[in-house]
Image (tube, rainbow, N blue to C red; front, side, top):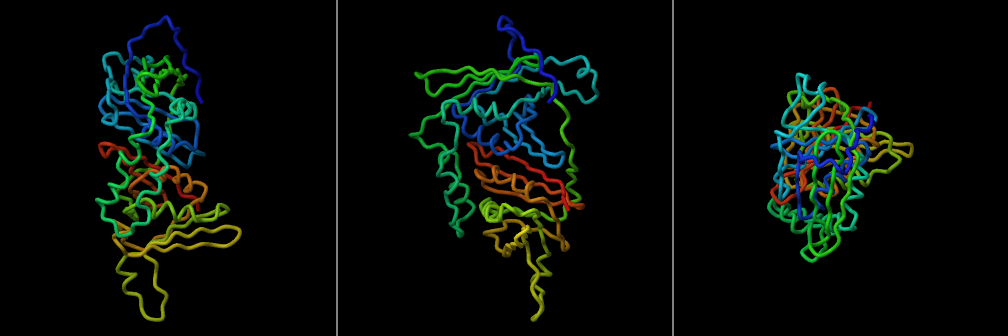
Length: 339
């Protein structure tokens, strides 16, 4: 991690660059927890968009969580108060409507859960898990924010402020209006460039949208942890339907896990209650390290839909949609190919 930014004294009363508040931190904490496999996180505040949090691992795996400004009860970004180092101001790609820094993600999550109420309700992960005949309306209702946040459960409210480069990230947390209030100041660090992965939509070799994330989550959970490699195999629908008698049918979509104790195969049917979207123009097979793909399980825990899109050459992108009050929030996980 880069050198620690100089922290101003308490006597400095800098006007906040960003002020954001939310009455319940559980959804915010859930999005961050979904990418919490690395402590070093790059956080970016953008005036009209919200917060982007990015982590990476081994220069191979990149995960990004998007928390839109609409999620917060209050979102005020003072563009006129934005300060930056002279080197940043002279950079050709400098954005005057955004600021970024690095932060220890585990510390941020611990602060959000300081009252022990930042975890999602345990019922959210089960919901309508085995209702295979549910309509899309039913799937969405099963994951609505009011089911995540029970009316009788205690909540932690948060007010977040950031005065700009050189200042800490400040969180004011309260369990209720009459209870105790805690102020946390988290040191910020100079932001370093993240791994750049090839997001080229034109090179998509396969596109799958799971109607409910548990179809993928359960499959990955059932693979033996000792698996070393996971292979994604897909064939066009026309090739699967034209299989001749006596010849083994090609799988529409197969997840294959291979390890020291053998292999496991799981096939998915051509059923819109399982695969809402399936687009495959030619037979494809891509292999990855299971240790990388299994990182998606945290994000899948509190999600409604998942998109899986391997690119030509093997780069694969996971886009995970999480339920929120205004149907915003998606966490994208990307895993480079590992043959």
